[in-house]
Image (cartoon, rainbow, N blue to C red; front, side, top):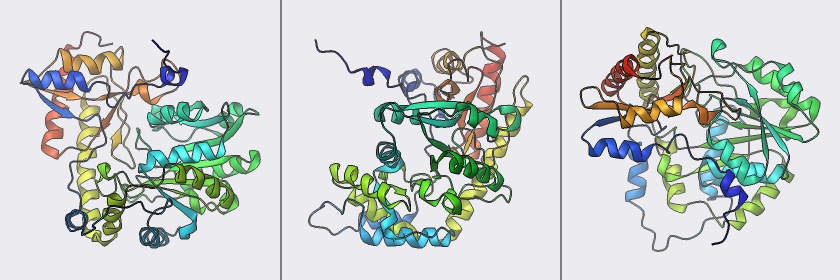
Length: 398
């Protein structure tokens, strides 16, 4: 039998999805499973997007331009200008989700063996993207005690080697919900400028900022405009994860011309998805206002519930729709599997993502889980009750 590739052997299983078989088995036993493991909102996709899909009158679903349908890119320009980000249609390539945008950015700017610094915990799939691109993630620690704020400059300086080519952030952060301040981004600007690195910024949760806080985009760091790459997506903003429409944005013409070669190799982004995404710009502001209000309620339920549980601590996220609490458990992988295999409270249980998958440093995240507060208030309250009761009887409680 032929060997599996080294790349394939190194590719990590998704901490978000790897426990699905256990959840399915729990459901077969008649247990209600509350899915807080994945960032799939239960909020309805805007009706205007669904109408656009249902009223497509194409006789042929053809390839689009490799950079994406021009009319959609023009709408993106309007969207970014509205958010005080000045770009042109030539500064962007529409992608199959934010995931493809990250891969294009990595493969266009880093060589195999090059290093990228990422504050951890970070979105688990960054590990997979790095392996696919042949690059090395150099994690630097952020800590739950200060809400997972940006690590100090000294941490970055210590991590930089001759192979370091980039820094990656997610703002607001997945899995912690941390929202970077302008001062923190300006600190990053100084590091990027000093060492002439790329700065990749995953800003797919831009709209999800709470308590009057404001999102600041890396695209407005004027001293490093040629170093910055923005990754974005409609998946979370419009609760349209399955459309798989993202975008890579940069003012670096040489980088974008290189990324275009990768875009041409995969031919084009999904045409149907782009039609729906273009319709998204007709979504009234009241939609997002209602969504934000709903997420604040959900966040407060999760944070307040967990902080009332003995031995638990949950920082208050400033954005996105994730929390990354510390629990009195021995091993988050074991705990999350146990919740599905062996525990139920009144024929209910909760599915969480073990935080170990959001770290690159071995051993970190064993007493943390990621919670996606994407369910309605009533289900979240029941899920938190399940979590509370589970911690009372979990055999690996510490």
